[in-house]
Length: 149
Ligand code: ZN
Image (cartoon, rainbow, N blue to C red; front, side):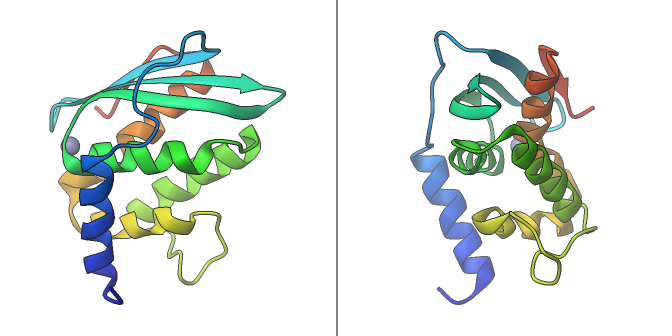
């Protein structure tokens, strides 16, 4: 368990098998679909935002283990947070998977999400991990579609 790679594998497998916040919110205040043609990942994200706080968030779709685990962990992390924190998290997550931020050395809000640092060594997988965050960005910006291409 002390090996970060082992923990990463376990978290991915576990969230892939039992995704959190899976489904669709009705009604919702924000919604977007995202796809990653490179891998075939597709997801739909619905959010209920009130007073600048993410009160509820759900996702559904199909994708690879990294995409589903990333979406699942994203929803558990942003639920209950203020939009400005969510934006900061999105920026930090992207920077981390691109190798521009080392969560062990720089202050950040990532918490459990820092497990995804491992994908920066797998360029093809970076898009899978980022897709839920790109879709979130679109949803909050009022766009209905996000693509990693
Ligand atoms: Zn994928």
